[in-house]
Image (cartoon, rainbow, N blue to C red; front, side):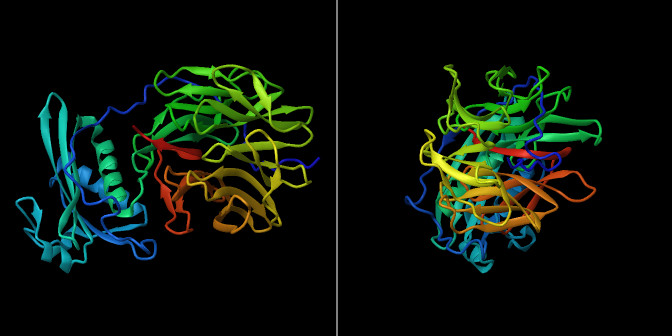
Length: 446
């Protein structure tokens, strides 16, 4: 039997622990929603990846929280690769008159959109944040809303505003008001400390969920509730899959099946979990209902079948297996029927992740040129490499499927989280408090 390739400290390290934290951000109350313009995008964005949309974000305030909110909105939109924030130094003075843009001034700068806003102290530790998006070519307001929230929740309000701008101008939901679970890597090579952690999508507000007494890895976000699945040697002996509740901090074992359980992945409705159960030298993919009911094998133990992932509609599962003698990607029905191989490249494939759009499967590839992150269509066509390196692994999609996050290691350095567009452009390192690996991008917050 072909051994599953396991690079040092890969996503299949199989170590972990658990802890307690309350991580729900305070809710933002939308107080009003002035009418926008039409049902579709306010501004045509065809070709935005090649020519980012010029947008002006005017200061919500010159200092303090208002200035911070302005900066986060600008960073969110710029980092998407679809927008180019116009340098505020080029703004013509007094280009917003009584709250309305002076259209000719913004037209001269080439702005397609203008964001204006204001921040006020609402008393009782509350902020009132108002914003408006203006369509410069149409000389009209596209959308606008006011929010009231706690003062320490200002960053989330900035992400929500950026998402609203993104949706109005691109015509689809954004992804800025989301969080990412990951593994914090510290310690030494001989005494590593790997903690379960969570952060905003851009690396801010990072929090450690476990204390490092046991190693954690391969966290996976539940798509519909505040819950993570991860792997741990928490009880000693063999690695097992656990659930971590982000509201209570409680940790729960997901069954003592087989010799070990690894590679958890939630169903689209969040009510069941796929994972691999090792037994007698092989590994089978199984489904377990989180409300109880044991496990249902979807493959046999005659080969190593691991890292399953549902399609967004829940009808299919992609996984990797060495059943043909080399580690490749396969797709099967949600009941385990109709297994079909989809990868045929001259190397080994691992860690498939289905896009929330349903149009792509991301994967890790290892061949003569080293490690790569790639994407292909669900039938295996259109295969292309997005990024390569000494070690690149663990692709996960943002909620709207436009951006992938993965982790990278260079010789002699630690792990870092990286984002890249599905077109292979706009690769960026995410700032994290420690070396980081194994990202899992969660859904938009509610």
